Image 1 (cartoon, rainbow, N blue to C red):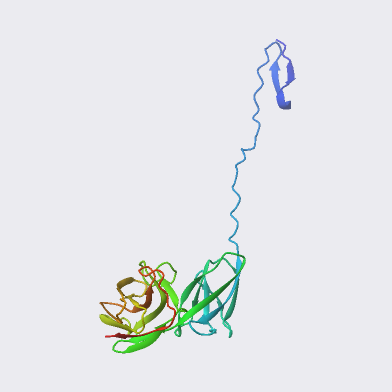
Image 2: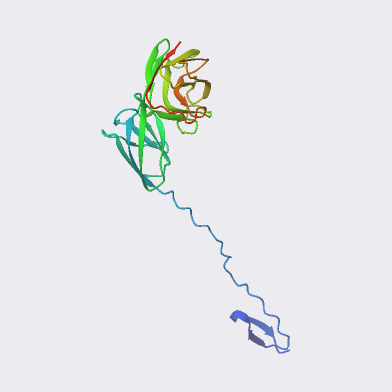
Length: 248
């Protein structure tokens, strides 16, 4: 039988051979490559907005302080100059911490919103009372506020000492102590006793007409003297209140 070869064209220009007299076979499908479906990728989050923070640092009831360390996000970013001024650029912090040891107590200060803002901070001169001695000072309207709401909280507690002085006890650790606070004037003072960054142990409130408080503590190293803004809302200091504190 005479055989002949016939070529036929199929889809996509492919060719298949068939034998004469036979029925042509169905063309073989040719796979067509397709692109995978596009997936939507969310755009990257914009970087935090940076800001320029400038300001001054001065002492409570005093003038500018030179050489104060200014920290933002836990990093040293500036030092105050001879006029107490500082400038920080390209930072994202919502608060700063000012500190100069051993002469002043470190404190945190909120940074207002905005790309270029100003922060005027204060630092409290350090006060230390040695066991067996007495230290004299005063509370004024210019004193700082120490609170469990702030980054510089001394104790894991709810408290707010307004127009307040922080006083460290020495030697450290001091162990069991009796803290006695005396003051003069019509404004009663309050006393907080605890261990730095650990726990508030005792709070005592002065009463009108009285001028002395005594608190015993098993293991304290820090006391605060001032006005309890939570227990006495609205009470303010209009004139300096002299006090003395002793530790036995």
